[in-house]
Length: 355
Image (tube, rainbow, N blue to C red):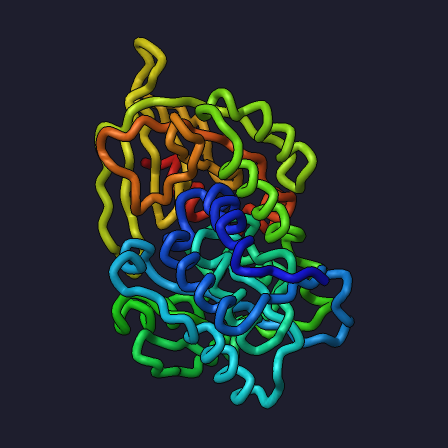
């Protein structure tokens, strides 16, 4: 087990934002909150999945809602710990460890504060290996782990218990809770054993985020100049590959909150003379890219849009007209190239192809 101190959070936030494919919530605000939390409570302990006992009890923790809302409805230091405590009261058992929903922006940091405040280890891994918009797409759900009982907590500290027949029924429940409580909420869900977790977790993503973020923060060069170093870093990971797909100028971006998600499209004028513009489909995250009638990138691969001059990742809610960007395509963890994983993403993939 290793200790995560406040001075390591900038690296983790940057690396997680790169993996988050534009989603997972704003990392800047969550990082400020997490720093304050770890300064108050002390460091969080990071535990490897293989070090968990088979009968250990683990719960998944994170934020739910439209990322644009998180820029206005600011997080509080104690909300993640409070939802974990409320969950423990419902099930009558204190969790032995906490795990993230996704290695995405804010959602990579929210569970760390709960881990530090309650002195419960945080698992080095997550349930997506990226960010995705729905609970049905977590590897925990794909493995058949029940999401409920679950607990949601709103900005005012109100909690609500959820019981659902399956994850398809649970997703609209927790989404509606977030929508009616200001657009964002924190939840604890997917109670599972250590053996169940090891069978489905996307491993080592917290430590990979720290390594990746350290490089992003201390390295130099634009997106093209950084491509070689980033490719080498990803070749040794569960993602396997990375390439700089394209670069260009953001000439249009539209987004609105639909059903509790940020749904929109970005248009990027290609830097290659004579090439058609690139159209990026967004549902909280960057889902796919078409150029003319050609689909050039799509789920389950990761699509990361960065500031071209620095290589710094840009969350979808911070994409703006006039930005010069680079677009990286990253290989998918094997969890989503399996028939079950692809089935969980089939609706999103179909929406990208139909756009």
